[in-house]
Amino acid sequence: MQLYSTKNASAFVSLKEAVLKGLPDDNGLFMPSKISQLDKDFIQNIEQYSFQDIAFEVSKTLLNDAIPENDLKEIILNAINFPAPVVKLDDSISILELFHGPSLAFKDFGARFMAQLMSYFNRDESKELVILVATSGDTGGAVAAGFHKTPGIKVVILYPSGKVSHLQEKQLTTLGHNITALEIDGTFDDCQALVKKAFLDKELTSQIRLSSANSINIARLIPQSFYYFEAYKQVKHLDKSIVFCVPSGNFGNLTAGVLAQKMGLPIHQFIAATNTNDVVPEYLASGTYNPKPSVRTISNAMDVGNPSNFARMIDIYSEIKGIPNQNGSTWNNMKEAIIGYGINDSATKEGIKEVFDTYKYIIDPHGSVGYLALKEYQKTNPNTHGVVLETAHPSKFIDDVEAILSQKVDIPERLASLADKKKEAHFMTKDYNPFKEWLQNNF
Image 1 (cartoon, rainbow, N blue to C red):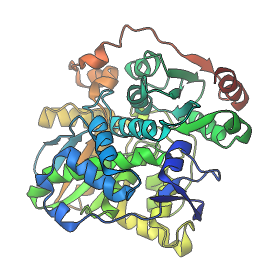
Image 2 (tube, one colour; image 1 turned 180 degrees about the horizontal axis):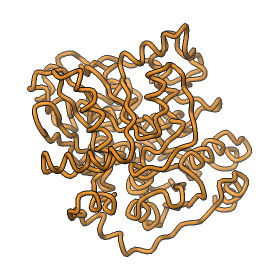
Image 3 (cartoon, rainbow, N blue to C red; image 1 turned 90 degrees about the vertical axis):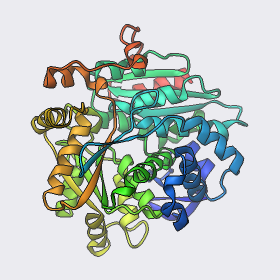
């Protein structure tokens, strides 16, 4: 398998280099040079495969012999060892529950696969690998759980002070060992900017082996494609056009779905559901991309004003690789495949109520955004079955959800047990130099 940068389609690196570096030197994002097609018989008979079998077939096809099959099977068995069930609400709407992993969020799939993959590639290295990750909520908890006590790897998680939920913060700040949390006085975009600047700092990267666990790392996107196939397997019998509605912040989750589609999964339409941080829906409607500072919402994991993976979306839908907006064709291609909706907080709260009152199902704020976007789409596309990605367990946002529903939300024990643990985090400004000095002093 070879990969190129979205800013330079003619320079290639191996999967190992792409995964361990995280980000190309030119500040682009790594993309596979070829998205191989799955055998049509596999798609037609997908019901016969277990989730782990699906994950193995998809990764084997996409990675194209980059990892020996026996090693890849072991990585899959260790990483993808919890389910992704589809819950049918009615004939038009289902919920894909992606919160059955250790941190109760969809990012467990990417983080656990990445941890296994990095550990595999890092096994012969003598110098430790330092992973930098910015989080708006769920990424940090998933990465912390996925990499906890992984030999040869240390993790530094940057999160915006006061902008993640109480239990999300405990997931980032209570594990210790090889996991360190930095509480940044700023927004998620500020955290992400610090991470990107560190990767482009040649002095720093000459001193410390850095990598990323954000969805800017291609190792995150590969396993996130698995559950699109697993969901399709569970709704295929409905014999309707299948639409995936994806609550979106940094757009890694939706980009992974596009990879699945490019590999042959028959997805009729993608819906990009955002909160009021709606720069991508605006682009899809107008053709103008206008990134802006993120605004805080109750669906905080989607509070992103300049999504990193938009560069990958541009690359995928460009007719000429590495050349965005070629005669407007990129926009035309993307808006044909993806429709976008922005949902405000007031509507999000009403959506949580509606889902509970109608279906007796408790959905989290991000899932509510997806549910409402799907309902809007189905007003003009009624003969479809929509699968909403429920990206996190509602108990991770317990204060908001319980206040909206006046209803108790059960907290799974693996999350409840963190409530009384002591938070350990280093408070830091959003300025780069103190961050750089901290890294140099600690690694």
